[in-house]
Amino acid sequence: MLMMSGCKNENNTAIFLEDENPKFEPIEFRKELVQSDKIIHRGVFSPGMDEYYFTVSDKAYADFDVLMIQKENGGWSQPQKAFFNSRYSEHGMSFSPDGKILYFSSTRPSPIDGLPDTWHIWKCEQVNGTWNEPEFVDILNLRDKLVSHPSVAKSGTIYFHVSNLDYSDMDIYYSKQVNGKYGNARKLKLPAGLNTDKCTPYISPDESYLLFASIGDQLDLMICFNDGNGGWKNIKKLNTAINNKGQGNPYVTPGSDFLFFATGEHLGSWSVKWVRFQPELLNN
Image (cartoon, rainbow, N blue to C red):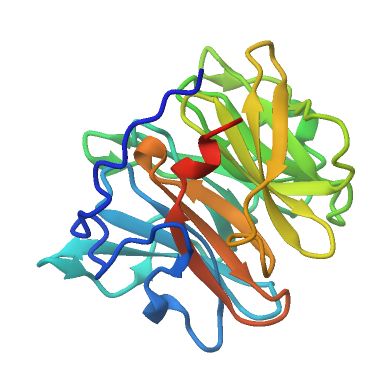
């Protein structure tokens, strides 16, 4: 049975420093972060909810940066580049549930000779309050693939999307951590009937549910639930209040209270919206 905490902060807008929290209709989160010459993508909070990281790109989807705002003096600071941002492209960041490791995808050169110049997974670890330099996450059977948008569970298992270098055959994979290293990745066994490419996964900390975007005429956000036997069940599309323009990059706040996601026309303006999420976890 899926266990859920109540939405203890439903009326506590101080956590997000917003005038109001959404209920069942998505609303835009911090509209001022959307720049006229940029596209905004994924947004996530640090586990302490005192920093917010978000991705922007140019309108050609060619140059990606991760920016960050943090709480200060009762409000949010001005955006600045994240500590791991480089002259290469960064995207798809995700904190471990304990906040000690930050995973992200990057086009920076890998330390392994012969790997293609594409998206790979990297991580930073926090030691004594200081973030270490980014480390390459080497998954042996994916060295010749595009690997992006990691999401990590309490177990240390990471979920991500994988494709050929031309972005074809994109699907969700996972890799388990053993003795500090990641084993060969496996494609996720999702229920039959969804014959589309898939991307931008979010795994709940206890691995009870998985969110991802299905790639069809538009991006649709989907959810499925762990069947307890190594598979997934009850796959469904999120409600029409969420799925109406093309959606991706899901992220859920601690306690499964709020869903954040990027939404917009493929070649138009995008925004990050948020909505009460627990109703989607019922009747699974």
